[in-house]
Image (cartoon, rainbow, N blue to C red; front, side, top):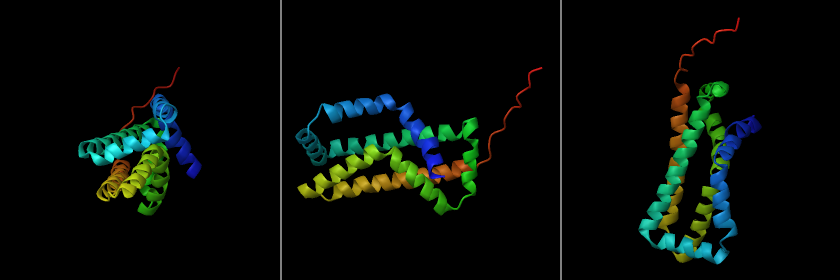
Length: 163
């Protein structure tokens, strides 16, 4: 079952935004060295506007991922996933956790990096806000998904058969 969810929700997400991820890995992976990453992370943590902008970028990324998943579920071939509403909240949480972690690996790695830098620099409130935001995003996504799945499917027009 876990493989089905990964193939159904993670692979299409990365295929749809493949160009974005290539650009991000080219710019931040190949063109930057470790000291440059550290300097950028320190600047983000030192300036409140930069940190707020980073949080906004994380929220936008989360909204794009949520919207992408909702659009997938509303397609005809994904209608079978509407049965997830019949699962217990614990089971939905387990399945969604795996999908969210895979789809948000980039955010989680960068949040871990910033957390390490912040603790090393003596800042304690930025990692708290960062992980609080990621946690709120996850639970909001899970709850909105459960609400969307518990609604009735829209009416389908019958497809006439060819003569």
